[in-house]
Image (tube, rainbow, N blue to C red; front, side, top):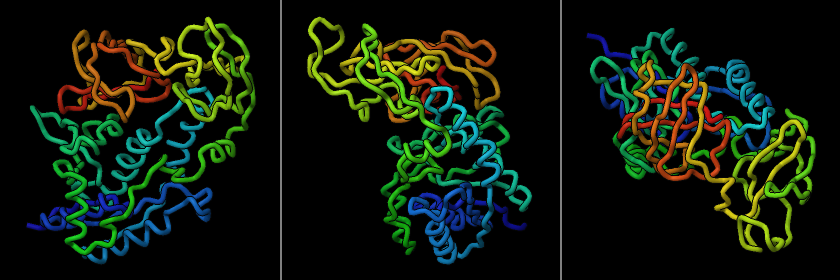
Length: 365
């Protein structure tokens, strides 16, 4: 019987490299695929794709697998970047990594891999997949500090049925040790940070290239007093503290913080181009128990039971929060959290879990 073929998305980092290594050791016929998703300014200092490709080729040579390079820049621009700009223009703060996974890494990539004759695709994500009662479940990774199921909540049954996550039960420190033991030079390579296509470049400058900034007033939410000027609503997100450039002491008699407390973004008026701020991290305007979400996506293909208790992450870097799924109405749902949540941000994703199983989620209104 011939070996089954798996196409592994190789990024040039240690995680995807070890994913490919493990699958080769398990007896799969492994093909590496390097995706080029951004080429608008890839000659600049912030783009690492050239070095990443060199690293991919070096790893592939060491492991003994073939690599194909595929350009998804057009798909990326149409399916991910255009939506990213639309969201910022509307005053929201999108999560392009969620879109990138559902539209590129598990859609365009999967379609391409199937044309190559692949039985499965694999990535270096820290997440798990299992078949349970005839359905595929998306699971949290064993390494809770690295779990990436939050970014994968839009995956569907057809995608999960074809996907392997070789790092599901591994800790990052062990992944690095495996790479080192195998002689892979990426063993100690720094993890990439920042938005997938922006990389390490200054975000403000990047966004201003595509959306012309328009300055406007910064006002205190409590009484509407003008405190300064902002340089574009799109540069600011709910709960933001840095970059407001409004110093000065608090006036006596104002609610919501001590006289030296920091200012935080609490709202935007898109029509009047006003940025509203409050003073004090725990100002009531920044704390909410309830949220509405839209653009719902459920891993099992159907909504979970409404009027039931689950946990949810209203942002990636937060512990699971106990919540009550109040209602699911078509493409919208309402969640109530047991504890008030800080700076629930429109455009970000809220992802719902039942124990280790990722049920899906939606975009915060």
